[in-house]
Amino acid sequence: MEFRLLKYFLIVAREENITRAANWLHITQPTLSRQLMQLEDELGVKLFKRSKHRIILTDDGMMLKRRAQEIMALVEKTKQDFVAEDKELAGKIAIGCGETRNMSFLSKHIKAFHKMYPRVKYEIYSATADDIKDDLEKGILDMGLLTEPVDIGKYAFIRMPEKEQWGVLVRKDSTLAQKEFVTPEDLADVPLLIGRREEVRNELLNWFGEYGERAKFIATYNLILNAANMVKNDVGVALGFNLGNIYEDLQLVPLKPALETGAVLVWKRNNMLSKATQRFIDFIKNTD
Image (cartoon, rainbow, N blue to C red; front, side, top):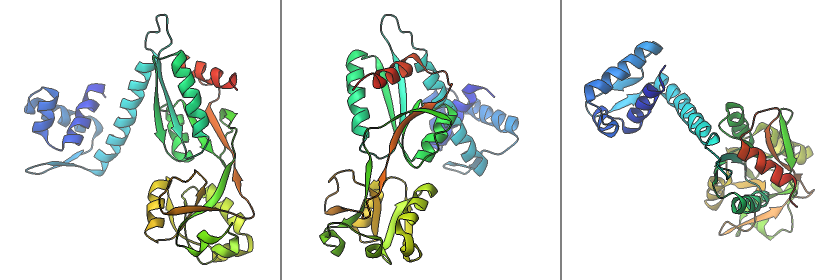
């Protein structure tokens, strides 16, 4: 399969129109149609459903789109890794980051490293630990800032300095907002929003203890922004980390007994890293 065909396919999938895609690629419409037919013949599947005004991806087309995007990202990242250094370090460092106060630690080190090596660029991807680990395995990311619990057996890592403090995000007009802390009994039978990771759910169930059977987990979330919107609209309350007072009309009340979570900055063990990534890791290790 030619890389060029994947590029053509992604442009057509984006434009949903052969004519617009051909104009964007500066080739004729018949040429582009032949290239797409060649790709379908090579894979032995139909990638598009064609109509008068637009084309729609089939299920096989959607699968190829995801794979093609991963391939394009990996190719671009590989190019960046091999940028000529000349006298100065250059390249791109791709880091997947969970929602954690330890992002401040990482940001400060990125700022200091950038002053030393201004030609190094950064790609920050916000996601859960599971998604970050997937992209580390695919080679799309160089490093990941992960909150525990997480299996780090495959990774080399630096433990982050701050522990994350768990709490419950509530509306300021909620009766829970008047409490100094909330207990498992306080949250029994209250609609709860929690992170979607199974390991996190198990940890929270352990915290609930004897009240676990009365815990009403009505929705899961990926990142906290949409969960905060649901709390604002009185869908429920959200269990999450104390990330500071960043949500208007909401308040995070600590849990009791207190629940803490660590965080780690990881990269694949025994993996060949780019010069920029390796230098950045060494910089973090040797900087207070």
